[in-house]
Amino acid sequence: MSDWTLLCDFDGTISVEDTTDTLLERFGQPGWEKLENDWKAGRIGSRDCMAGQVALLDMSPAELDQHLTERAIDPGFAAFVAYAKQHGMPIEILSDGLDYAIHFILQHYDFDYLPVTANRLQSVGEREWRLEFPNASATCRAASGTCKCAAAARSQGSHGRVLMIGDGASDYCVAESADFVFAKGKLVDHCRAKNIPHAPIKDFADALALLPALASGKLVAASRTSAAPLPNVVSA
Image (cartoon, rainbow, N blue to C red; front, side, top):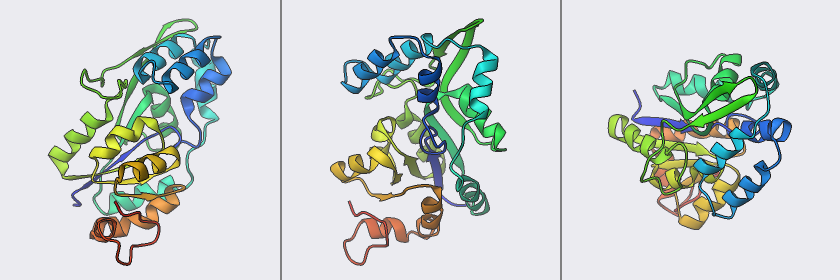
C-alpha cells in the first residue's frame, strides 16, 4: 500500500471540457456571463458564482442527461486508474463542479466506484436547478463551494502524502498544501509563480508516465534539487 493519495480535479482534468461551462453555453439564461466575469475579477467567490449560474440553467433532467452522455474524458485516464489501483494509490475526485454531472459521466465510463467530493446539484422544478454546498468551509480562502484544502488535509491526516492533479483556479489553494502537483493549464503558471513542486502534464498519459517515479520517491527528490532533474519535473 502506497502512502500517496491521488486527488484529481474533474472538469478540464479528467473531462476533456469543463462540464459546467458546456451546460451554461447550451442552457444558460442571460446573466451567467456577468457572474463569470465577476468571479474572474475577484468580486465574488466561486461559490456565489456557481450558485447564481446554476439558478440560470433552463433545462429538463432529460436534456441534462443527454448533454452529459456526449461528454468525453481523457483517453489515458483508464490506464492511470489501473496503475494506481495496482500499486495501492487511492484516487479521490475533488471538484468545485456539479456532483450529478461527475457521477453520471464516471458511470458512463465505468468509474462510478471512485469517491467524489463536489457541489450538490438539486432539481427544484421542471426546468429549475439549485446548487448546494455540503463541502464548503467558512475558512476557505477561495470562497469555493468545495474547499479542496480541507479535503486534502483529511487525506494527509489519514493516508500520508497527497498528489494533486488539476488545471485551474479551483486548484490553486490546494496545490500549495499538497506534497506534489501534476499541473495542467493555468495551474502550471501558478505553481511556477509560487515555487510549488510540480510536474507539468498535458494529459493522463503524461501523468501515468510519472507515477513510478512518484511512488519510488525519485520525483519528489528531483523537485528538491537542481541536479539532474527528471524529465518534465520542475524544481521548487
